[in-house]
Length: 308
Length: 308
Image: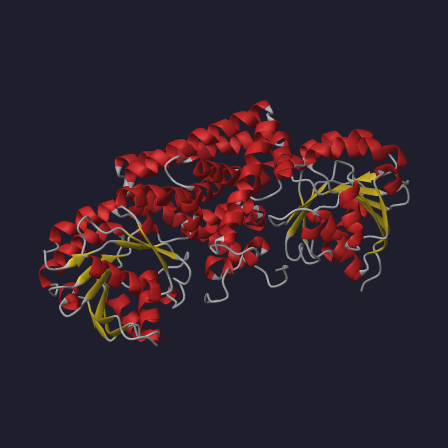
């Protein structure tokens, strides 16, 4: 237990990320009070059943009125609407942040509704699972994962530091960068991988001569790895692509060019090129494992019978 | 311990798959004698240090002379050369099989070197990890994974059944299909996923404005999932693509068409199409989990701190 960092935090949206923040904040006493707000009464009731907060309301404006930290945990496409609702009701001096996977668009949507006496500091926890909803949350989700903050020019350094401390207490490492760079980096490390995964699962599903049963049976040969991120929340990901269009299209263009080169090598039997491309990729995985962002166990350590 | 199925098996090639066969066969007494042969003395010495077999030789022809089951565990591109070496030295009545990821090409390469008094029955264990070499083997690799046999027309049913029993004792389920269908199914479930994974890891590595350090740090947002299969053996995979060209190019054409449709939806802001595509993919993952081919734990159960 550390001293509480905030007197009251308000979570607007209570899916995987919101619920995980709530559970960790409660576990470690990072706030004296947690208010939870979400649009659907059913989800709110579930959050209450799970004991995620101290106060529950469907009214976002009501939820934020006493909060000294407000965290927007809704899909990227809903940020503007929520910001408009809460803007006039924020407490003077409050920190407002978010957990959206795209930063430039969130800034464009949220900033216009923030008055000068609150601190809007956009953020993105680079953590998650393929599960969604309040039941998917767990207190250790952010442990040793990176949290990216993209403060606007002239952001109050004391407020930024306070938010940084909060995320470190949630378990994260914190990195500061500008929003445009964030959006390009995440297009590479997250958005395009998701699009590719969704796409290949769709392609397999559409093969007329191969049954779904066969795809399932023989999925351990590679395919099943893609189905994990392709099982992620469809609405959240729809919004990511709609709101990070430029970076996504740019990286996708490069991906398709590179794939065309591999396709050509397959067609013309260029084994040298294939082997060269397939060799360079091992190094990156080694780097990820060494950085503590991945397990070294074969097959992600899926099975109890596998070696460590 | 069951009764041995074979008096002597010979493993030609001793990487992940060969070593796993050896370990399981020894553990459960599936053969009275295991002979191991591989081209490189260094690998053979390592196999001996690991105690994988009873007899070791770099001479494949010598290795097979007393074996009643010969299993070719070399990359697909090396099958023809090995078949030519061992062909004249096989024992009458011996079963010859392989573990190659492509079947039509292996048949074309191997069958011409098999005399009428041996039983050549091609096979493919749909199991593996991203690790390679004899040290990567483990006795439970095949447990509850599928083994596909693609017997030629007129194959001896007694020999097929014996080989089927052997693979079941190794832990597998066994499925019989024709080679051409195998090659198309595996193009979808295995070959294209590997090509895509190798490709995206290469694309990320080539982004000028994004450092490798950033790709590594923020990989937990999706990218790292792809690096696992992109860390697979480059020579083995080079050969798969060179030897399953037609099916790979066909599925890749479909994949690229589908991706172009998603790309267009991103460009024109067609959220409805994106959400629809992203929703249908969850069902396949559920099917894979229900079929016992995947863990239901979030994030593949990577972390001890994650929920089950």
